[in-house]
Amino acid sequence: MTQRNKNTKPSFGILGAGSWGSALGILLARNNHKVLIWDINTQLLSSINKNRENNTYLPGIKFPENLQPAESAKQVIYECDILLLVIPSSAFRETLIEFKDLINRKKYICWATKGLDSSSGGLLHQTVADILGKNIIPAIISGPNFAKEVASGLPTAVTVASPDISFADAVADSLRSSVFRPYTSQDIVGVEVGGSIKNVLAVAAGISDGLGYGANARAGLITRGLNEMTRLGVAFGGKIETFMGLSGVGDLVLTCTDNQSRNRRFGIGLGQGKTLEKIQNEIGQAIEGLRTAKEVYSLSKNLNIELPICEQVYKVIYENKPAKEAVNDLLNRPPKAE
Image (cartoon, rainbow, N blue to C red; front, side, top):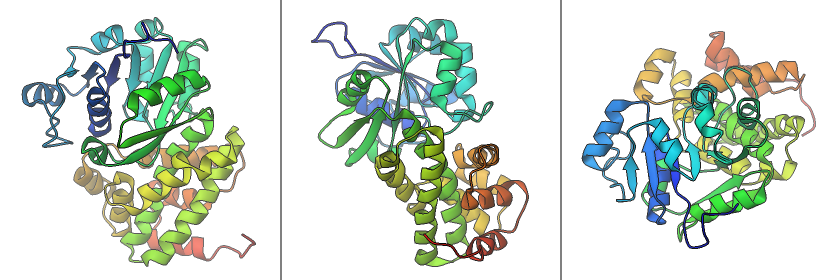
């Protein structure tokens, strides 16, 4: 990727001012990039503009001066060198469609969204190619990260994946700091699959913990969940080694074991017998695993791939199967070699 000149850092335009979008904006601004950020939530954007911080999701962490709220999504897209989408996967396709003409003036697009296309059930880079054409060069930022820790300057490592390694390098260089270490990959398929299915597996781990089944059961779910992640990823064309890295096992372990994970907390609520509505109201943010469970279940059937943990999560959420019965069914599956 070529910058405007070798001494000029690329500017970033971020669509999505939630916790992760704001955290990445803060990181990029601290690295002396010009950053514009916009969100569909006008009240959130107004609060950010007034207080110079995201009081809703990252209270107490001030925005650098070179991180500025934009008046519109069009301004963000038009004025930036690199567009960075940090929006729920459910809004990914419609956002690309709405701003297709503006985005198509660019060569590069990056996202930090983890999930599958809500319409096709496919991977997001496929959605980009479908809507914007194959001349757009995509990249994804993924890995074991919580927004608050990144914004607070705590050590973090991620993967930046793109079929164009020069673009992956450029994004990684923009993010890199003394406490933020990005690695690069060309396996965008594997990175996307890992970032999607780990949310469903985190729900499973949360269900187990909500039932009080302890650390042994959680470890078993994580380990066998990694097997399911790898099986699905390889079927899509991902590389096995990707799932042994940050965007695979790294993200899986983090999301399944720490209560900063919305998907894990969602699962804990299910294990405790709470209703979907009550859990969603308590969490108050998008829970990617809720919808991704349905999409992964459908994929497993279409591809004839056995994903027993993901299947049980689907049945708990969408078929009202008792959480305890789902876990017991997993434990009582016929014995087999590992």
